[in-house]
Image (cartoon, rainbow over all chains, first blue to last red; front, side, top):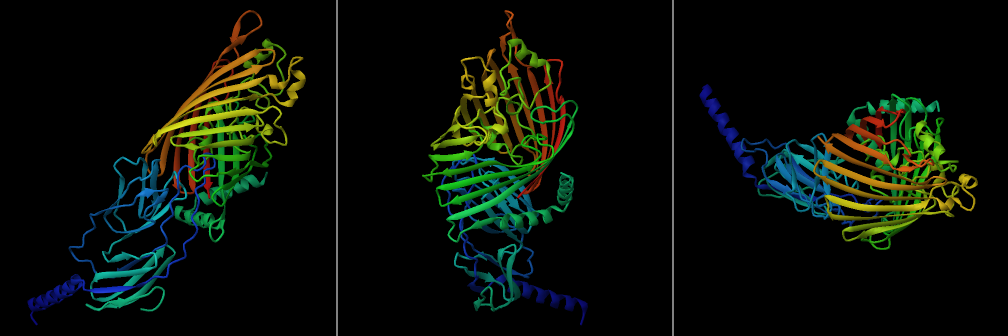
Length: 220
Length: 408
């Protein structure tokens, strides 16, 4: 076969593949077995006593995401903005999942100061102390990985941001139920991220138009 | 105490490990040192600070650093915080070190520095009642005095500069009292205005009402009292000290407060030396202070001004004014710097010859510090201080100090 014809055929096949991937007609759903909620850690104020009402932390959830999908040329880092409100001396979202490039704002919903900092490898930052009424402090998560969030004023506050390269992710509800739609058909890995030490992984064969059921831990 | 250098070497080796390895180890330690009942009614958490400090001084050590030379000072502080339901809280602070103030017990010492039981009847914190041995409510610095929060290694001048007032005996004459100005600090017998966090024993009530905070305490010893007088077993409440603080927080950035303290400062040993017809309860320390703090983004600023009057037997009122202003700025998530200006001025007392003289040497000190938080559990600080006293004796004119803190 002439080289030009071979190149044209290869390009057609590649285009067909990419088109199939881009179509995003498959879906997957199921449940993730979540850890039991632990009793809320109490803030310790050795010298000043209680300084405000403490909200309940977000119950455990998990992030389910698809790994191994080739990125398309138009798959650029996200440019959206997400908010995590600090209120009742808790991070409003104890677990947040974003795509690389997402900007996250941290409005202060309390009448006293909050701070957000992280020493994680994926993002090292400190937003200082900021007030309720001022423009929310923000940070852009530009590297994939896990970013642990803390407040230097309220040591009991904990949060995590899972930064992913893929656009195919979803957060479970507090019962562990998830449904991930708009996926490409094909064979990939499906992961359920609960925390840094507990990540489940299963192979999936996604078919267009037919929902696939996957429970974690367990068999698809 | 041969174990101390070994322990210090171990800790330095630990600090030299990669940050992620330390972080993981200390996080695991953190997680394993707490116990919580299934529904969270009972929760107890053990935490701690390991400090390794070195002080390099060109004269006799200043402030509450004891001894006569450079100093190596390791310290282990353990905190047991326990919550019982929503209303009860207890704290126990245990320390192993070379004395509460560095090198007061060169061969090593272990103590319970704080222990308290607190009752908080309402969740909004309008009232807390506590009893035990705990830090004074006077002033604002005490709330951030531990090595992790204090941007410096030493305390402000007001909380550590030793004056010529003693709690051990009445001076024989005014001339004898004034003569102390020409002596190096006698730290075993003289007093500062406030002795560090003043962990004396007693009870307090405090709380928050809208934008106001109040605190009142009834303690066994004056705020200037030395650590050996803080324990109720050593000094009862026959001659108590009452202290109070009222503060207003107009918004999250600002806080200002006024404090007052009044009580006998002489120890039982002085009873035999006071003039006939008087007891040690006749001689009081009265202290009034004001504090102001502001913070925003990477900046934190604190200032305190304190006026103290010691009623000195055979002398009269010995008044002093001391203040400091301190600022900290965080350059990066890890790096911060701090500067503090301190001054203490002494009023005059009659000299017995028809005149009046300043009863101690006026002093100023500038403190500078650079700190680095390697991780959430490891911090290093360097401090340089320049101190100058009006008079022929300089004590610790230049001080260089380093501190490594591991928090878990």
